[in-house]
Length: 358
Figure 1: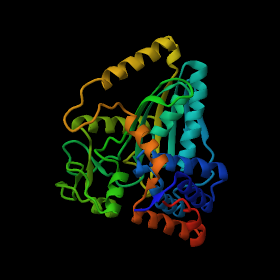
Figure 2: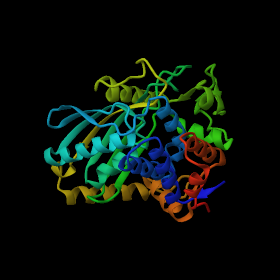
Figure 3: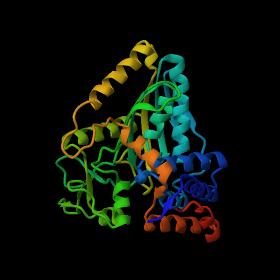
Figure 4: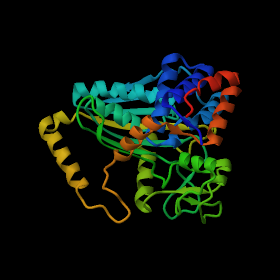
């Protein structure tokens, strides 16, 4: 399996984004976001998404250089229309506006409508946490066939609908905790990664087209046959429904029942809070550190080396992959190179970007 440096993958992603017409700033934001997903271990939302983005661009379902359009401004409430713009840039800009407003008012609610795929939601939690703000986000996934079966259902009715919470450690720092999860047992992208590697998905994560449990991701990834399951039985299913309603229905975005064009559309409802308006910062930080230390002090259960809190696995993986490189399976790398070639990039140009292969 090839192992590549973060820099080489970022250069490759940048080349492909500029080839479809993104301006330099947009291409840099996209490339950095994708590679950061790989660094944190979330390959499902990393550079392996590029072939999908190229398809969306060619079908007019991802629009380069789209302008984020303010729809409403009610002080602490901001509503933006993304118009299928490159999602990583659309969401980054919307959260930046929310940060500015939350700093001024103490809190802000940001609604982002109709964006193309915004990627790893944890990136926006990190963005807010570095500004010293709490971040809570509900996200829906629409514009394609539903792929998640609600609890008790044998057929898909929902998207993977992520939920995210970030609690800041302090301004300029990474989050004290970062909870970023799909409401499905596994993200669709993780099924794609498993298919590309020729691996099975975990038991209980997938149903076949007849509603029976399966571990074969091929039919779901290749033909959208079957369904992912919601995590945690009725609990994850309920949270997925809440994400659908909060991140799309109530903000005027595209829901899972709207007419589809077989793209990826995300809506997001994000809440940003300045914790300094709730309690003295010294008190908050002391208590956050005390709570996390208390949790980590628990003796690990059999099969675990230690107790972790949300965000710990990403921190460990990031340090490891920065030092050792990012593994990428052969099929994913081939698909990325083919997607770049379909945009007119010469094979030599693409391979030159991969000078960091280890």
